[in-house]
Every structure is written in structure tokens, then in C-alpha cells.
Image (cartoon, rainbow, N blue to C red; front, top):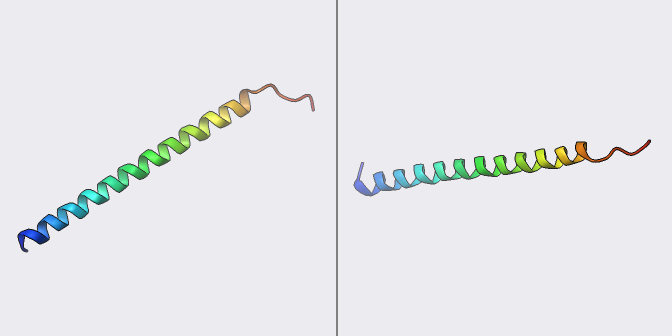
Length: 49
């Protein structure tokens, strides 16, 4: 395995980790938004009917 291949492999690994972290932060933000929206939805004054 040449030095360049090894560097490329490391780069791909880092890209993968960054993508995983990115998707995790996206899903965390989505669930947080969803929770705040549903919390607002349930805490709002209920209609009479």
C-alpha cells in the first residue's frame, strides 16, 4: 500500500466521520424542532370543540 493510497484512505475515513457527525447534528436539530413544535402544539389553548 503506497503512501498516497493510505492518505486517500484516511481522507475517506475522515469524510465518512464528518458525514456521520453532520447527519447526526441534522437529525438532532430536526428532532429538537419537532419537539418544540409539538410542545407548542400541545401547550396551546385548546379550542372549545
